[in-house]
Image 1: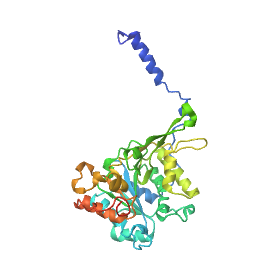
Image 2: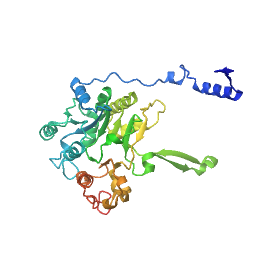
Image 3: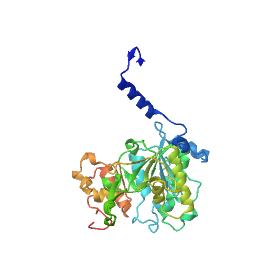
Image 4: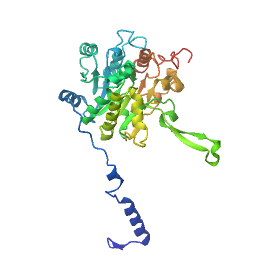
Length: 355
């Protein structure tokens, strides 16, 4: 065979034909049977909310940070909060808005008490009041979990505007701007509840059933859940469909939203059960740190503060494993934003003294 005036060798011809065979795409094959999902078109976005999202999102990547807040987060009545007092919303804004200068932040206020607080104390922070109700199926569940049920319908609306969303709980301290530390190569990118590399990234366990003889062994996969309190969501069709699935389940079933989210995102399809189909990245568990990792499993990496290496500085720490949330937030603010390096050294690893 001649090509460009030359003659190809037999080996080259064979290699070219093999490459061509692997490059063939059959339009009537598997992709045609299960086509790539399309972005849902049934999501209505209030024009005022759409305008606020587009105005607030970052100019470079079109992204926002979204937090949900109600009166419980301010803890003016210590009987309704469970962390021994302290205004978590105020501390979150002191760091995220004032110290780090995150200006693509939006706060969804869920009651008039919080709306008034934001108007009078933080008037520059963009806020909106979602016109949606917590599903009646969640009556009687934990107050924090009830608020979280609104996340998924809200995320559907933000995705419909083509906006990337970092949805965040308020009981965490950002040490650095998190948008500078995202990969953006998956549909969702989330903080893990795992507290070691194996638990965070996944590992295989094994069983040995000697009654099976030769076939005694077997492997299974284990990985900790994604924490929806620090979750980056790209505006893709798969992300939108995942949020719709979780929102539908929250409206139909009583349960913990984070468990339902992980079931839809991480468990495989089987039988009549479909799957969320999303691609997943786990955020670096030593940079996007849960409080068990910081105070307990990797304590020697972070504490004592005076001897911690500079390359151990986290992007954020989430107080999801400890009930004394505000106390631990304040020590982290003192350490990383005010230079008091030993501010957290006295706190125990667990929730009880001596742990």
